[in-house]
Length: 257
Image (tube, rainbow, N blue to C red; front, side):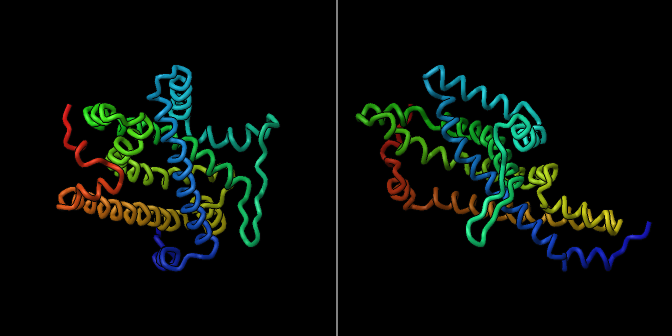
């Protein structure tokens, strides 16, 4: 087999407009799906921990379905299945110079709903990892439950879950290729289209793999920088003042069970 190096370098460093649009769609779908997952994850985690059996079982059911069925099936079901049942049809959305195709909307929604189940479990683990002694001390001081959650539990839980959420976004970047099944022209589908015309399979998919590797590597480096900043903030003499500004009482942070 002859590897066409000039063609490979051209695709890697001088991709066409179609591939650049696919790169943009990959990032858009991944970021939007992650944002929806975050927005869903925290309320579902709180429902999962709720004393209300209805809320707790509803949250468990949602997590079970989203994590127990293939993401590819969910994408096709949301875009094709709901339309076939005449329940939901995704139409192109236009707002001035901006537009969003219906299949892109469906792909973002499917990724977000799936990610919400994983975010819920990450948030639940972070909340339960917060020292119970601090919440008990806050309640002893007369804080209502919502204030305890907002000022004591969530600021500390967010520190715990930040890195798992960051790692989950790397998975989201790779899962974004699945929306190609409903015709979203992200990087994988664009590569498949170019390959069908050029038959430079090895060169094209090698370049595609390097693009995904670059995206995940850049995000990993950014995540490590955030981790170092968080560790430095904990060791800094003003960390207690910073916690107080964020809503965490420095006195309560010293309370043990």
